[in-house]
Image (cartoon, rainbow, N blue to C red; front, top):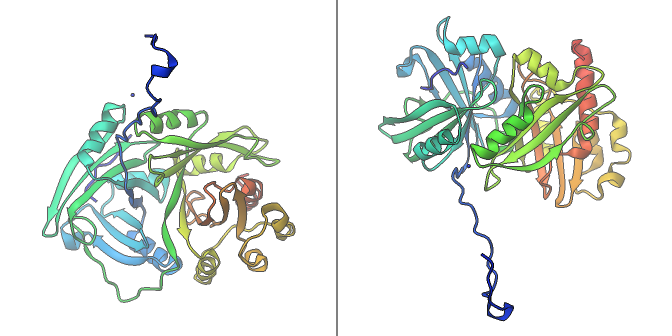
Length: 390
């Protein structure tokens, strides 16, 4: 990817009968319209092996690559796709590079959350003038398939947002990439799009980043959870969910809260070396089939005690799915005023206990599984105990 390293707003006297009919207050225009998530770029030690893992384990399909064969001399990138999800894995080709320094500091993890916009220059101007720290000044890139414009700003830790404008581009991915067509391509697993992405930040930093997304990017807070909502006998955390104007982008932000032992957020911050993306939630229309397929391919999931399912229907009401199947696979269920959702979480997919994935199916529900928090975090704590980090 051709992006630089990030080191780090008089009383009316007429009578009531002559007053005009009340009108609705004017709506504030969205100064940062976002069409959706364009791609997520991860800096990793071995881009080809990472792409191979996500193809074979999660069913992603090969899409594009860039490296020595395409004229890059400092890095190589492999792009995989499933549904509307594009993951980019990037590795350095030499020692002593900014990408290598990022991997040394954080391990394999998310560097860039790229957002699809109609005007990357305007997105950059609007966010920088509201206080964003620049990362990538607007950059036009061309090849025979057209032109893209990208720009970027810094967010928590070493994570960045890239604004991608591609209305004048008709190529496979981005200029400088070529189609990647290896002979072996496992079948997709039914993953459709990114539902939300969760960021972990440090002690007392959550509200700072809530304010950032509100003031710099025009997001609104959907819901807030405190340590009474998200706690176990040992640990706790707090979270606020930020969403853009059309609801296509949702970023929960977590911070640690006081507990008897080290919380999952503290463990993440220790091993990642600071704030970063904790998990990526990907949507499916058939979670039972998807999880079956992922388990058969070797993806490991967190498990909750079998007793969780004993009173499931009393807790969440009638659901379409067979409870025995959910019990077998370890899929969790929660309900809100709009409907219900099903979700399950992988174990960390990187060498350090940092990044993991959530598989989610929404059947009307717009929430985030509050009723499952205790069971989920107890399952995470059991894994922490095995790692000796609780």
